[in-house]
Length: 143
Image (tube, rainbow, N blue to C red; front, side):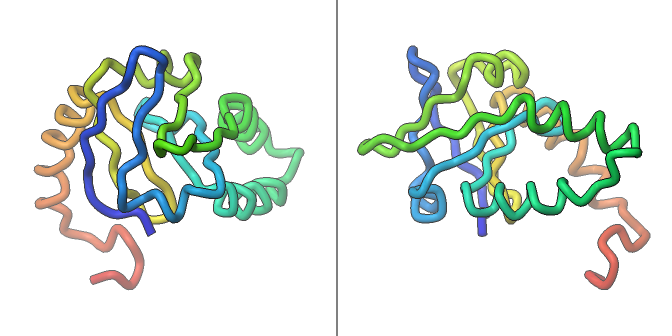
């Protein structure tokens, strides 16, 4: 499970060093793709394969499912961490997420997310007030 926030730097070759707490889970390979809110989703290969199985079950007759599948999978890239635990973020994904040198990698349970540090701070500031004011059950059975 991916938890916490980390602040790696993007190097001149478009690589980041994976957070130490995420390395075991991602050592067998990662799949990166476009995430919602202009971040990059990072899955272990195993988790991405399980997710892909669920996606494959969406009806091909659903335009919304087809659109989601196209955007989600067309941006996906399988990467393998090197011996220094670095992984290259493809240029199309760096551009999509507007990444600069300063990044934030957050744990989001079954995936990690890579954000430009400024974009993450802005998002978090906006969402923290919404989070504290949530009065209804957002996740069934949680509270």
